[in-house]
Length: 239
Image (tube, rainbow, N blue to C red; front, side, top):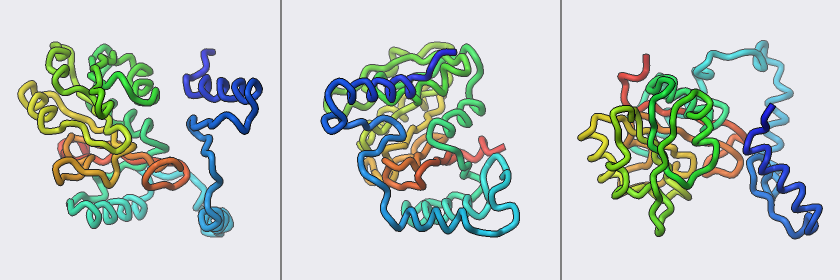
């Protein structure tokens, strides 16, 4: 069995700590925050675990609890001045899980998806694990986001989606990217793990593409410890 790249990154951190001393290695790999969670977060988790409501720790529907989906939709509607319904919110275990849901809707094995060459490995893993071919686009030196001037040359008859990553919360050049996507009739998916609350020319990141993934990991802008969501902007993909 081949270990995942996330596991390999963690193991490399263990080796570096042995070599240079734990106090000299700052391991920011997935699941390794450098500061403990706040006491309030611990208290809330303890209260949830202690709840005696029947079935609270049982299975849920694939899309998540209805009240959670409603709460996420209401929060985003208020914060971003948009209008999404709970049916457009799919709760997941993280942004990578949200990408898995998105690709099942849009992509088939042997399809091609254009992705930035600089991103976290889980962005690519979601596609490779389903035999979808990632086509890497160069990134801009100023933002490390997908270089919109190199995008159109990568489109082929097998291109089924363009995935943009708003790295470090800095928006990609969405006007140019959406124009190219529209002319070629290719859906855009936003990996918005870094971009929640960010804007591009006054418009919220995560509202440009047909879908947007969100991360609620402990290192992100809005956290539940772990977790994520897929926001479906184009209602034709709900079914």
